View 1 (cartoon, rainbow, N blue to C red):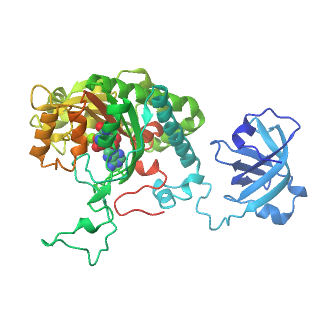
View 2: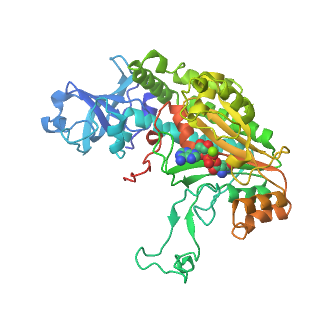
View 3: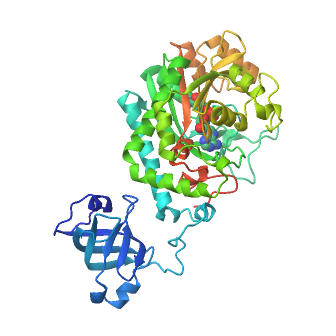
Amino acid sequence: MKHTKVKDLLNSAPGLHEVKAKGWVRTFRNNQFIALNDGSTINNIQCVVDFENTAEETLKRITTGAAVSVKGHLVESQGAGQKVEIQVSEIKILGDSDPEKFPMQPKKHSLEFLRENAHLRIRTNAFGAIMRVRSTLAFAVHQYFQEKGFFYVNTPIITGSDAEGAGEMFKVTALPFDGTPRTEEGKVNYKEDFFGKETNLTVSGQLEGETYAMALGQIYTFGPTFRAENSNTSRHLAEFWMIEPEVAFNNLADNMDLAEDFIKYVIKYTVDKCGDDLKFLEQRLLDEEKSKPQADRSEMALLEKLSFVMDNNFKRVSYTEAVDILKNSKPNKNKKFQYPIDDWGVDLQSEHERFLVEKHFKCPVILFDYPANIKAFYMRLNEDGKTVRAMDILFPGIGEIVGGSQREERYDVLLEKMKALGIDEKELYWYLDTRRFGSAVHSGFGLGFERLVLFVTGMTNIRDVIPFPRTPQNAEF
Ligand code: 4AD
Ligand code: MG
C-alpha cells in the first residue's frame, strides 16, 4: 500500500478506508498522540496509537525527530484542532532519533541556534513554512514570465566580465597557490590558467542577457550570483539568486511598469497558494514583536502588508526629489543620519532609503534618474548629461529590492563612458557589438530573490530565507 501525503490526508473526508502515512514525529503526547509531519504542509496529522496493544519497545522509540510509517483508518477527530486523524493499527519505526541528542526539541529555538543547525532547522515549523514559500515564489517567477512570452536564458556562472564594475568578485582559477606561473613582469600569468584568462564567478547575468534580449525580444534569467563584498549585514549574501528580465524596445517607464506588475503578481500567487504557511509566519512575527517596544513593531501584520503592496501603486520619485526630501528631513537636520545628506550627487545609504519608504512615503518607492557617477557604466545617459535612466525599487523593512535601468544603446556614448571608466573595450567587444549591429532602446532590472523572500515571509535576516547561507567567514554545509 502506498502512503498518502499528510496534506492530502488532511483534505480528505473521514471514512472507513485504510490509509498509510510516513513522516517525522514532531511530538508524542500521553503515550498516545503522535503529531506527524511530512513536509507537505505546515499542519501535522494526529495519529492515535493504541498503546495498550503496542509493544512497550516500539512506544519508546516514538520520539521527536524519528521517521515513522503508520497505517490505520482515517476517522473524524474527537479532539479540537483537526478534522481528521489516523486511528493507528500498525506503526513502523523507520529511523530512530535519540531524544537526548536530537537538537530540534519541541520548543522555541533562537534563530542563531537554528542557523548553526541549518541542516536540521528545516524540520521546524518556521523553516518548513519559509522554504515552501520560497519554492512557490520561484515557481511564480517562471509562471509570470512564461505567461508573458519571455524566454528563460541561462547565462554563464563563470565569466571574464565584471558586469557591475564594482570589483566584488570571487576569482575562479585552477592555478596552484604556490608556484603560480608568472609573466616577465612578475604578474600572475593567466594565459596558463584553465581558461587562458582571468575569470570570476558572475555578479550578474545582465550583459549576456542583453545580447539575448536583442534577438529573442524578452528574456529573463534566474540563477545564482556571487559577490565578495565584505558586508556582514542582514540584507547581504555572498551567494544569492537573482532574477534579471531584459526587454528590447522598453524604456525606463516600461521597465518600472514591468517590475511593479511582476512583484505584485508573484506576491499574489504566493498569498493564494501558501495561506497556511503565511498565517503561521504572520503569527510568528506578532509573537516575536510582543517583546519589542510599540514604536519598533510593524504597523501592519504580514498578510495586511502583502495586500497593501498588491493593492497600491508604487510611488515613483526622482533621485533629485528624494534628495530634497532627505535634506529637509528631521533626522538629517537633527544629525541622526550616520551619513548626512548635504549635496546632490551623494549615494543613498540604506538609512536614507528606509527613511523614504518607511517614514516618509510609507509605501514601496521607485527612485529613478540617479546621478551618472554613482551608477554602473551601461546606463542610459539623460539629456541633462549628468543623470542616468536608473531605477531602484525600495521596500519597507528591506530597502533596495530591485536595481535596474534603461541601457545606453548609443555605441559612441557607451564607448566614451567605458573609456572614461577604464573598462577594457577589447574584453567587452561582444557587448559593444549589440550596439554596433541593430542597436535599440532596451531595459531590464535585477531583483534579489532572497530580499523578496524576506519581504513575503516577514523574516528579518537574509540568512534565514536561503537554505545554506554563504556570508563572510561562513560556508558551512
Ligand atoms: O542593484 P544590483 O547590483 O543590480 C545589478 O546587478 C544589475 N545588473 C541588475 C540588472 O539591471 N539586470 O543588484 C540587483 C539586486 C539588488 O537590488 C538586490 O535586491 C540584490 O540584487 N542584491 C543582493 N541580494 C543579496 N545579497 C547581496 N549581496 C546582493 N547584492 C545585490
Ligand atoms: Mg543596486
